[in-house]
Image: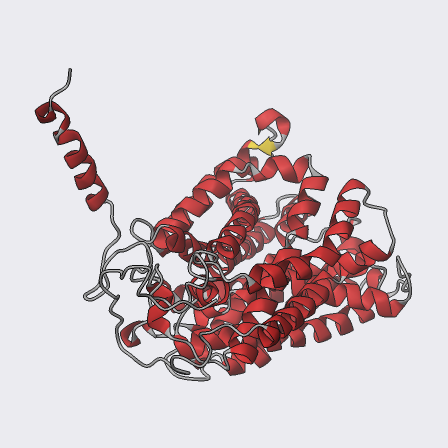
Length: 542
């Protein structure tokens, strides 16, 4: 029989441990189940991003390895190189407009996607879009880290040629030992970089964009100077895979929107750091499409020229660099160039991983457990889960799995549609921010049991038309019918249907909390509410 004296110390030690691991607090911002210092409306002293900061941000987002390889998707639809570039222009411009729209709530109310979901989905219902985004980001972060590790391996191989030619493998032959070493080193750089708060990342972003920009310029100069042309891809005739050229271009535009879909829906995660209104707008409308178009166009040109020079079609720049080191027989001058170019690829991977994955998913994880996880801890947890996902396994063996993960973009478009419809059409940009951090019936965003039923309904209606095509494509990559065609334009379909249906549902059955709050938040700090009221006395919005 255990007495109270023996049992008593154990809960006390556990409580002390939980208090010890709580995230740091700011004055007036207690750690509760709903806010912490990374979730509150961004205080004025932490709004450090100026107009030039967002130009650099989009140099990171647009000038990246996935952007460089975007042309491979466009050419796979049967477009010729010129048509692919036109498609990039149209897609890039649409991305810019969507970024302005999705980033507006961050710029005006200084909140990110994680908190914005609370007024659209309900305080508890917001967990659903947040968890979906985290789940998908885990796998993409693992892939980005794997590519970053390969870029590190290329960089080391330029200094130590023997490292490049290491053939030892791990994980049943699916992972080269040199790549695993590269991944470990990559994560060391990543952990060091994430020690820097998001509001102070401008200088590392400048380094990253300059380094990869130099890599792109160097590869372009090498390619064109050796072929004196655009290469064989620019001489190939268009051969649309399914339907006419118009359909192929539409598929390509949708692919571009899907590739930057996570970045557009999470724009408010970064625009909340704007030091004044409209600071992000110019870069979103101009720099975003410019960088996307330039990077992908350079990728098409360099890949085309490299095919003529080395005889292989290589879309990843770090793999091309490794091929060139072999092609030029480990020439010292070439190795020096490859070292700096490879370092640029490493910087690009670090930058894009932080911009699109770590900060956003870190804030999402913080929204799930605000008392114990902040952005930094969430980013470290994401990195661990990304590595634990064994990206080399599903890159090597599971094309079906990659199709499914890519297809998860069909969920992001309805999230964007619902958020845009609710913020702009239903609420006319008026939000009661305090109630986004109250987890009971006092909050006007509590709705019914913490869930806003209109959002899940609109989301299901937005996802449903694209789901059959995803399933059919997963089962048979050559399948082609009306459902698969809809799947290939899933971003447009999901965004428009969810936007329209949510607006109509709210027009037919208006929520009872519209028009309450402010259209712009200018407070320098944020203080959470106190004790919850009883359910009988709290206001209810359904």
